[in-house]
Length: 297
Image (cartoon, rainbow, N blue to C red; front, side):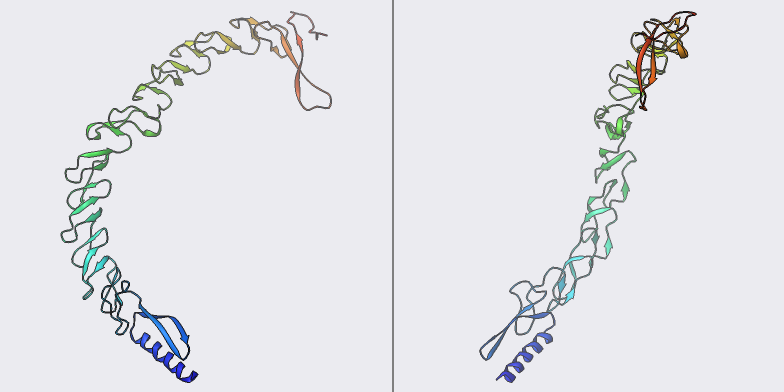
């Protein structure tokens, strides 16, 4: 009995191989009988003839009696009987989808007329480039819809000011992320005062001046012996070495190293503590002309 069953099984497998495009699945034994569930590989579900192996309908991308042949690469679907393309993949057109739609996302299968263009192109075949200052333009007229970075206004004809990151509002030109250093105004089109490093982006008032300069436009010089002064008042905040006083007009006298406190003329002595690598402020000396400096107890 086993010999007869094996012959049956081999016969069924032979049938499967003859009907290329089909596969044997779920082989099972029930007593002295063998069963096989045969499904065509590329047929749509429940459209395969289990006797002949032919398919009523093929899965997308296949054609032929048993759906054993593949459609051209540029076809998404083709006719079952002859493989002629009935629908192209995006970007291709023609009877056999063998022509490329240049600069199109998708185009008409017969005429090749573009339905949607890639950014920067317009026209029936998307053969025209948008203007250099335009990122997206109308497919039929070329009129700009979205400006390229750094441009704004009607047809994106105007350049943004000195905007941070290069972006400005496409309608008004106002800078969305503020101005680059050295510029102010709604569109960051105005330069800060000549000597100003950073200015208020609304009115241009200077917020940071170069060393030894002060004023709303950094157009005043700090006092002669002043190393650093207040940007708004000009009050000296730090004297050059060897001077003290409100305007740094008084010499430090006989201070060690000619360094003294700006307001009082006293000097802080920096000493190295035993067993420590750090310097600390220890004592105060007073300026006494032609006299030896002493530490306060």
